[in-house]
Length: 135
Length: 98
Image (cartoon, rainbow over all chains, first blue to last red; front, side, top):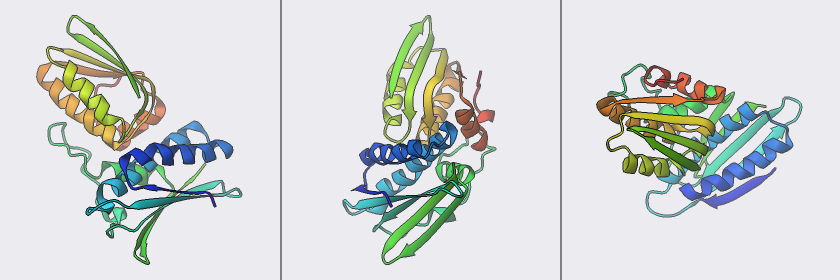
């Protein structure tokens, strides 16, 4: 399966995005799903970059897979940082006014609503987060 | 991301091109901080914006708060994908989208 290992840093996001977009184009993914997957990468990878390694630098691996029968595209994000399950994060209140609004939690909420499936497990000292979408 | 600007009599138009995400949102924020003094009408043109993530939403929300104090803000030429982001996050109720 295609995979890429990069520094768990914000400036790695374009590299991971390019990696996924090249595959999505090969799989003839429509533009809307492609954009939604790009947003999901930004949300998931920025979480890892900001929070996984509070005491220093680390790496993250992203593995892509594609089930041609179901046209299901999946990305698995793996890091060895502190255990963090983003799926446990509660959705923010999206009915508040501009002055009362907070941004925390909006990213994961968007990913939840635009992807078809998300799973998380902490396994062998690693955070393993998978997002999947029919394309 | 590229940002082009046009200032006309207190009305500032910013045309965003590319991705508004974690890596580019700080640039957008910086541009806005530098340019919003004295602006009473802010127009954000998203026609060439491919997508935006929550990092972009944060800057848009902060900008909307500021413009609520000093004038008005309009976002125009919003694609269906970006409109969907505004709808999912409840931002459609906070923003003026043309």
